[in-house]
Length: 275
Image: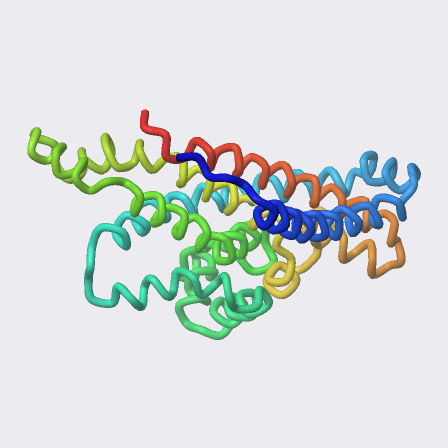
């Protein structure tokens, strides 16, 4: 029996779309305000400046590497949290979400303290000739990747766990009865069925890593040509009074975020389609 739509339904729909319209209009007005403030000169300066292209390239490759490392952890951690109950499960599940809720500056300070005030951190960065690992993170491009990973890996792990939660465990049991090992069941059944959610989480992880700012200021600095990324370019240009150039770079970041989020929506629509 089809539902008869009456006046109350139309009133509810009108009220809902009013809130949708107000929220969307607010976001568009904010972006338009930035776009209307800048002029062609600022846009040309951004598109033609070597330091902007250098910062953009560094933002891209560091965020891609951070996302790859995050996904490397996300699949096994997400699968373990979804399928197993082990001592400390609740603690680990809570720790996964911790970087999402604490201020980003805390991550930068924590990394700085770890690598400069603890024996383990100093050993990691100590040269090989001094018996250390020789892995330099502080005020180095590798530190950008580390900051991005710390702040964004939670999104990848949480998305992977949710994706595995949606996979019917009976399918895994059937695979096991047909001769698959647990490893084979993961690779041939669970992972293919969860790939859409994992991919969507990877896109969100990359978008988060691409735009982080606070930890970088503390842990790697804003050295032009070495540790500068787009987010710190905005700060550097604004701090010397180049507000239009800073806003032009900000619009570039917003554009990248919009493309990433729209891609998530497209991927999410196919996330649970069976192969």
